[in-house]
Image (cartoon, rainbow, N blue to C red):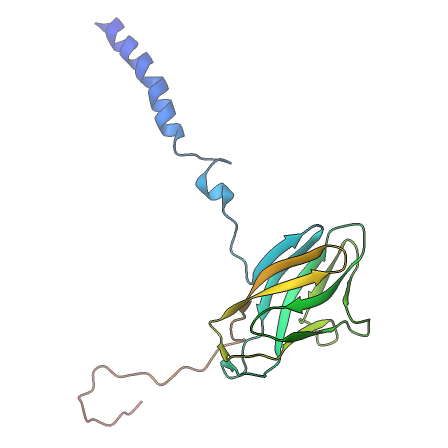
Length: 184
């Protein structure tokens, strides 16, 4: 009788191990292939990586047609050769101005370096021009970035959240009777 129980236990243990290994702890887990949360769009082409691509938050919550819109991002050139951002295009904009902080018509990207675009008033900027339609803070756009050496890549630029705390509307008193003055 004891031998039969041992034989059954020996047969069940490998099956139990297989069932429990289905939990996928480690590098084959479902979460191992998920990327962490990031702010802004990300793309890569060759040795160039673009991170945190975002449109400036609208001053009054709305970008009206014709408004210039600042693009912020970090461009990392992980290669051994310098490159240059030469153009930014995408609907609903008709153009872009690349301000390289005193450089030429493009934005210089030194090898093995990060370039922060739009985060420093003295640094490089990209301003999207010719906005064709009204945009609110809830919108994002796909932009094509053209690099002299690496080529073209597309990135989705989200609209950045409002800087700092925003004022709240007056509180609504759910306990007051209809017709009472709002004392809040």
